[in-house]
Length: 182
Image (cartoon, rainbow, N blue to C red; front, side, top):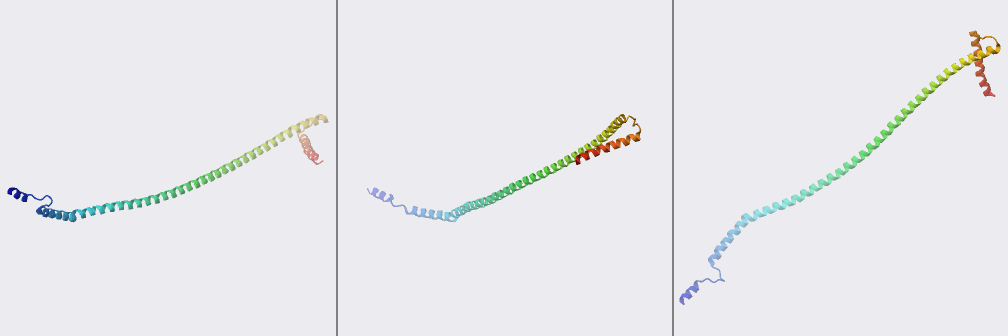
């Protein structure tokens, strides 16, 4: 039994840890804490700050780009409105120019029409005068022939014939004028 008693004193108490393990564990824990606090935690803090800065910078850059995009969009809308206004002005100018050209063409057509009408009237007047001369000549010849038959003598003499025709025609010209006065 003694043997059991000696053995019993050598068996460690499971509730109480061995003091050597506590010392080695404490030293290892202190070294681990020192390494973590000196090297790992500052590195983690730098990485965390870098990520925070990147995220905040990214948000800030995104907001700036959004503001730029909004400004560009407003500028685009203004340019579009200006382009529409310019297009409307150009359409109005083109319509006014087309109307001016139309009026010019109409004026030229009227001038050409008036010129053609005037030339036609002049031609009609010339033809009328030519016809009147021919008729006077024919009437004169017929009148001389008729007068020669009535008088019973030949009015073949040129001078007499011309005088007789002139008198007859002047009597014809005087007849409508006298008829118009009564």
